[in-house]
Amino acid sequence: MMNRFRQIANEITAILEDEFPDMTWKSAVLGPAYPKTLTGYVCCDTITFDPFTKSKKQASATFTIEVICPNPKEKADNTQYIEDLAMEINDVLTENKTIDGWADDSRVEKIVFATPAGRPEIGIAIFTFTVEYEE
Image (tube, rainbow, N blue to C red):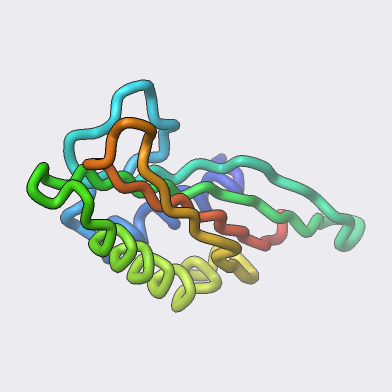
């Protein structure tokens, strides 16, 4: 039987795949090479537990959602696309706080924008996404 945390992680990925079908979505950690196409990664960083009742625990999972956008050379310095895309992803996550019923609540804590050192043609948006649920 799949644990609740894995079900939530899979559902986050499924929601984002449905809303952004032109992107590749993965649940693996990015390796040493940057993708050649627009790619999103959904990875859990931590899970904390608090007593809830004798039979259930309240859990809080913190996910990193990383969106990597290799811009064409002629748009290497254009950060507007990754910023706009990040705001659209934020809206989708905010509109589905219960992750299709798998969670009690969820929220985007922050979004960090970056470019890798020496790679201005790649834009990155890194989300900290917290999900509250019963284990």
